[in-house]
Length: 195
Ligand code: DLZ
Image (cartoon, rainbow, N blue to C red; front, side):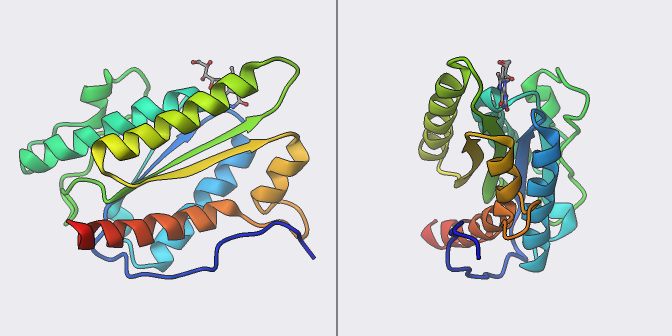
């Protein structure tokens, strides 16, 4: 029996939502199942595949600014009603996978929630402490400054084993990405109600 706890799951109707996922590429063997788990729950809640935008950045350090700019890009795109302004344009297109935000879907609207996914594993230096602190504060700030719910999908773990358990890769483990997908839908729905 696992001692890893999670939220009491709540499933909301995500069919009208547009959700972003921004993930780091460090520790990709952990990142991949987390992103997969998040996406599966989004789809299970009715979010359309075409309304889910997934982008990657090098490491967790880059998550706050990328989430912020992705959200701003979607606002610009929404205001210009589909003229094709892309996140890539706004981010300077410095990576190859910053594709244009889709304009051919029902979801040319600003993101209703964005999930930031990263995996920080403590090493022998102080990197972990600095990055974990800055990224968590940065993501909180982006959420409060922009008003878009930012789901904190950053594992801050002491070992590979802890990371694997939280990505559902070990017996008795649990994929936290699934919780993040559900949280994004719940907060996206609530955000619309709060507007
Ligand atoms: C440098 C670094 C280290 C040591 N560890 C991690 C990690 O465990 N997880 C992660 O996502 N990123 C790590 N990085 C990279 C930084 O997040 C960042 O990408 C670089 O310092 C460049 O800004």
